[in-house]
Length: 164
Image (cartoon, rainbow, N blue to C red; front, top):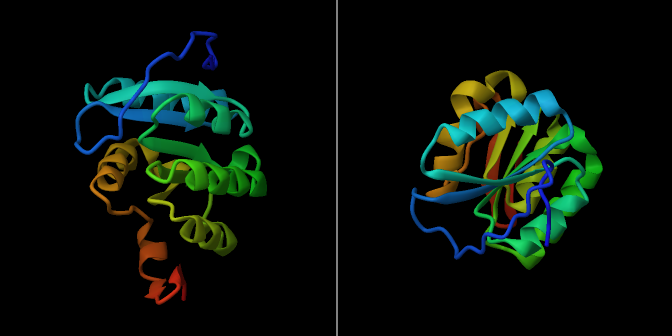
């Protein structure tokens, strides 16, 4: 059984979420200040179930495998390129998981990788308090949330989305 960062067993089995109620969220990031503030915000929403906080990127695969995660919030700065590899692995095994990346800055290579993986969002840490809940809900609805300076440059072609 996987244990979240507090040592509390995560035993909740889930079915895929198809509504905006009881959304299972897993948070991946090693910066306690960031993850704890996001966790507090998520806990204030009755429709969200915070399944756990994973401090190491590699633990995300195990946590997602153990539970039916609807939304995975992943701090890119946790392990830079390793987070994209892990996210790709998760999407391969659990294609229903909506991934939202969180970063301190917009880097085209990060946005490109997020788009290639099929991420449902890319949020800036400075914008989190007001963007996190709408981004999660948009992801559940099948949409995506990207900063305006990124959205205006996304080009959707026959092979998928990219930065133009």
